[in-house]
Length: 271
Length: 271
Image (cartoon, rainbow over all chains, first blue to last red):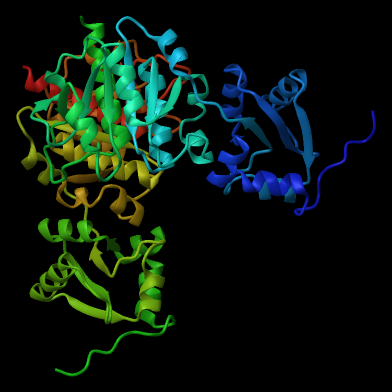
């Protein structure tokens, strides 16, 4: 085995390619995305995410966790690429001092996979037009925690493969069932399976805790500023609100989503 | 009335002072902080926050909302300082295109004010050692929405006057009762008023929805990574957990706090 050579040039085409993947249009065209963070990488392995390339700092002093990740990459036949510290810092994000980074293939789940994941009764989240990566990531962390069967991501303004979504979800979305959809397709699917659409909106009259959420439900939450679009509100089987006692009339969308998801859990547990 | 002169120099001492207030040590020494955002400024006025100086872009085309804010500042005898666009962009934060900014006096609430705010039974939040401004701001937005009587901020690693806390709370904290405290002082206060400490920790055996939260309660939540310190867990009257179904063993601290606060609301409503 020869000596391992590290990429030391910032103008190396592979390095330029990785940097370009921080842009959505490049990700969409290439169908590849970046995974960073040891916890995120481990969850990607655990969920059998298709990782293609693994970058590491040549001569880095690796923690046990990092060594284990490198070993898994090797055992899975993933190509390992060594970089100089300077190059690695360029491809890695912000001020985090990590030594590993992976490129994986983008993949959303299919409707038929979602059907297979249905619990009895089904429990879904519909997230419409979420804009901020941090919010989408936090929502996915909560859907994992609340144990939903799957997420229907409707006309999102940020993709789940944005590095900040991967981060904010701490890699929980790798093992979740996430379908990318337009509204009409989603309505068709939900109606076919007789799943009730529960729209979360400040204009509703019923508190979320007064709604019976023990049946087949899809909780729908909308964009940060506008909330759910009228098509979702009009076609909802029920509209619910979160009561607000103070000076503000809304909660952060990830927080509002989690409240309703956990109310479903509470009601089902006590059924 | 003479022609209004705008500050056009970045080396103007007032401008340097405003920029310095983005640093915690300067804020703490000066007991002043920055308020930005039209919604935040309006809430500061509504809550009678002591605003000292109001900066605006000379010749800016102001919205109706902004004109109203400027008028309120004038009516309250606040000194108005005009800046050139270049100078204003320097003192204002990030890529937001706003035209107003204020300097206010820092103030925390006293224990005696908190006592006066007690509902029957009292309902408090204890936030220990929160580190990220975005999380602390989100927690304060939720305490406003859930209608807690007040917040005990224990040994915080970020101050509520950090511009990002002001932002993330969307100015909801101006009207809230927030006491800054060390743990011992807080224990003393809670014990004096016979308020039960409910510690939120993943190691608890009881789900938060199985706990009776209808009495006098102070919900305690801890730092992002370590959670509550042992002193709070040991001295808690009850320990509760949020059930987790997925691959992760924790939720974001603002989300976890909100779940428990709203469970208090739900139980009290249905009492």
